[in-house]
Amino acid sequence: MKINENFLKLQSSYLFSTIGQKVRAYQAAHPRADIIRLGIGDVTRPLPAASIAALHAAVDDMSRAETFKGYPTDCGITFLEEAIQADYAARGVSLDIGEIFLSDGAKSDSGNIGDIFAEDNLVAVCDPIYPVYVDTNVMGGRAGNLMANGRWSGFVYLSCGEESDFLPALPESRADLVYLCSPNNPTGMAMNAAQLKAWVDWANEQGSILLYDGAYEAFITEDLPRSIYEIPGAKTCAIEFRSFSKTAGFTGVRCAYTVVPRELMAGGTSVNALWARRQATKFNGVSYITQRGAEATFTPGGRAQVRDTIQYYLRNAGVIKAGLEAAGFRVWGGVNSPYVWFKAREGLSSWELFDLLLEEVQVVGTPGSGFGPSGEGYFRLTGFGTAERTAEAVERISRRFAL
Image (cartoon, rainbow, N blue to C red; front, side, top):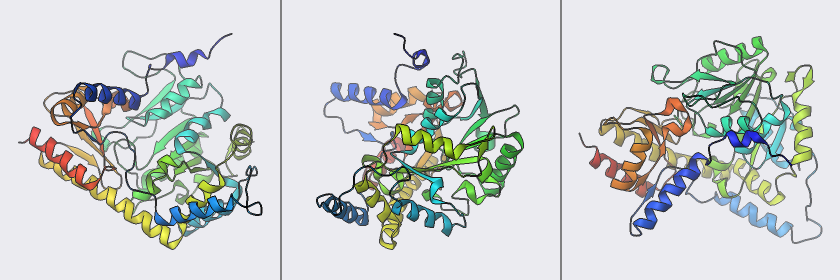
């Protein structure tokens, strides 16, 4: 018996598991500590009222033989796909139902997508970036060894530093699969149409595929694309991941979807057909009850309730951004994203700042180095807390780092 030795290449603990362990250890030693958590990007607002009503109605459906639902068909139950299809159409993007695949999370899909691609494909990732993109490809065998600089051989790393406002530059070398996230996690920065067009043109010229994470598209407030398919030519080079988690509070309910256009080909093979085959084999679909709750977010009332929640989190992000800037930090994000990214002061490393904030002001954030080597010296806070606790956290940090 042998194990998949690629798993042994990974760090022993996932970033957010490490954070959780540190916080639990601190709280065990200081049981009365009043800790404010702005680290893990989990939501705090309740589900939209429209979704709650739909979930209750769906539970009632499951109690009656005539409305009971069992396994969904290979192509889903269609009503939620139709709502998603109409949402894209409102942005001028035409999709077939068979191009929309429901799932339990964008995290799952962005990792599972690697199942349909060869191990020797070169994967390009931004640095810093959401660690799941790297870890799942290491698990899938698309990495050599962890190098001294904290990067994996076998990956192409895209420059994303202060000089470019943490937006990725086109690769100088070949890359087969490219992960893009806009608005970005962790930096909160979003790409405009011209920047995305450059990526689409490059991918079509190179024969590469863009794996586009749009999980935070609903937080965009400026005149920026909400979908990569708003860019001409994207259907022949891009897969898009979206989620109800942060937009509608479904982190504890689980529902997302991935768009794989029929025009997208790889080596003469339909990527859409391969993903459909993979999902039919490895995934039993999103529950009927969950789908009804997600469908309700596209109703007029549901849309208004989701907008109110997103504005709540964006106001929190704005409070964090303004407070950190007033305290003398260099800050990014917080405008089109719930995430605020800032540079550490006093010569602190990312984890040193984490420990300082936890021990001295009892505020939990996320060390930038956890998102890649280029994140060293930076830190992420989220706007997903309550307004009151967010304001208190900013006040505590501001007092500690008062100019």
